Amino acid sequence: MIASKYWKIFLDLKEKIKMSRKMIYKIVVLILLIMVALVYSKNKDNGTNALKTTDIAPLFISIDHNDNEIKLSDYLGKYVVIYFFPKAFTPGWTKQACGFRDKYDIYIDNNIVVLGISYDSPKKLRKFREKHRLPFTFISDYDKSISKKYNSGGILFPSRKTIIIDPKGTIIEIVENINIDSHSTDIINIVLNHQKLEDIN
Image 1: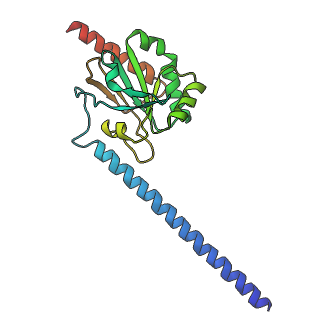
Image 2 (image 1 turned 30 degrees about the vertical axis):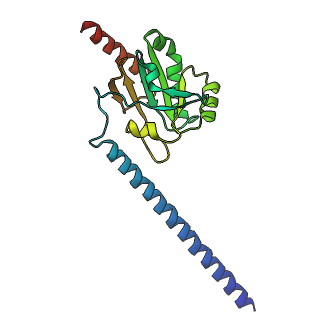
């Protein structure tokens, strides 16, 4: 009887170990699939359809943090900074957004509009904006269509990227290597340099 009892415990334990191994295997496979998909997405973005400077910025219509319709064409005549970020309320992207906030007077003085874009819902973006007193507009790319147009699409999140568009609607800079600590200042310098070249020409 005792031997039978311990044999049953042994079999139960063995079955649990098997289940654990199966679960670990499934998790590993899932991670590998996600990694492959991300690499594919990145390679696709770097292909022949990738945007480049001097291209006309793709137009889009979406909804902002207040659930209002927003169109890129509404901002013709202004410099537009579109920055894609993975997710609201994460530490790094909060720091990036607050960098824009702290320099926003300079942006306004130089006719620059900032549009932050993620897959987050308007409600979440609205809470993010209110909590950190962010003065600029956020756009919910709920269907991932804008990110795809700008080669910034990802499976779970858009890839980090900033696009600078001149008042005529032409892309003047694409920034992918982003230093969160200096990003807002870096963007201002790019726009100011462009304005100087325009004045010379």
